[in-house]
Image (cartoon, each protein chain N blue to C red):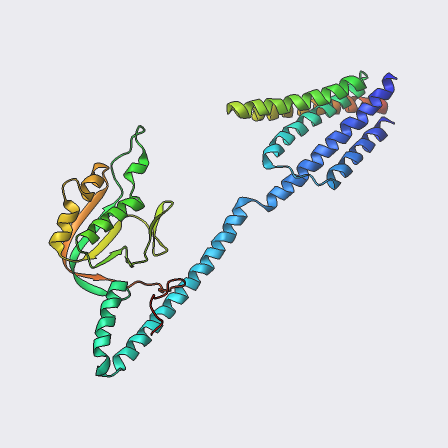
Length: 238
Length: 117
């Protein structure tokens, strides 16, 4: 009786051992297939193709735009008034490179050494800090604004994307150079107002350098403006 | 006879493990690895006892399951209190496995040498 129970135990023990080893072996193989780094590589490749595609499309946008300009220029003087109107609208839409006086604002992350008792996040530039500056510039009558070469249009977003900020779907990182065309004096005083944006950010050591410029060049919006949903109300006259 | 039984058990277990659709998360896999180490230790200890002549099936079987569960429990406790106790289990079991292997080798060598002369 004792011997038989021992034999049974033997079978059971080895069966369990075999089961565990096999299960573990299969799991390790499966894990090796879905190892995260492989996923990262795939995503990096996808990003690369998407980015090269975007660059191609950007070139195409430039080409088409220059064609459009050619066509417009060759039209007769009858179109001059329309052309003028169009120019204004294009400046407003941000698809035209513009130049004029204004201010150059440079925002940089705080260089103050962080201490353990304080949230290091407070010393970094966030999307809402940029939004505040832009809002102040607009309130002070800025006519065109760009951030690190990204022209702000009526549809531009300024949004947190992890360590960077997304503007016009492009990632930008500090230091941020904000160009604004408008009355230099008004723009500067707007930002430097007591208790204003520069003051508040200065509390956290975030540097906001403001410089008046006589001639600034603000680039055009580089992407394509498309409307999928918005329609003009009141007749489809074109 | 004993060898046949062990082989039967082992093959049965491997076939079972290969054919049932087990999906083990990487978290559980860690426990399983410690359990396997404990199991291997027990099996080697059993083999050693068999060669030394004091093998007992019941002691062997209970030892196997108790050690396995203990090792898993150890790991679990370590995980809950944030200490990598499973490393301790791996080291301790590894040392014991080598110990048992050394004893097995010595016994087998002695037998071989005795038979030779």
